[in-house]
Image (cartoon, rainbow, N blue to C red; front, side):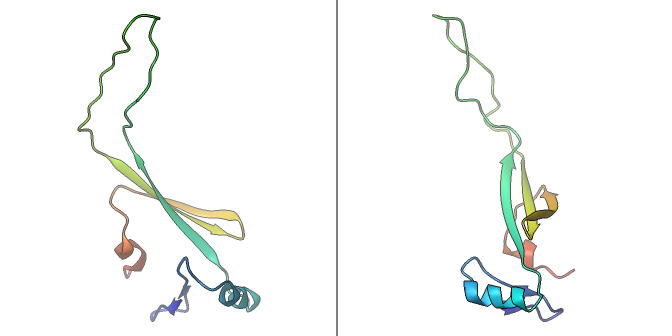
Length: 98
């Protein structure tokens, strides 16, 4: 856990001590959980259908690029916000100053 120097936000890592988190909740501090996931724009199909005895053929652009990353926030089990990004998500995304 560390405190952001510009405001009163506390940042917990995934290995945060549960007693420490509980103490912040009991003190009235909101605990918000973030998670990130990425989705490819074009996923190749690995299976298909064709008439019995006929070859299953298809066309796919194996060089296709494109990915959308999503960050969601939960507060007290409710979805607080969802943000979509067309760039890579890394530590800088979470720590950049605004």
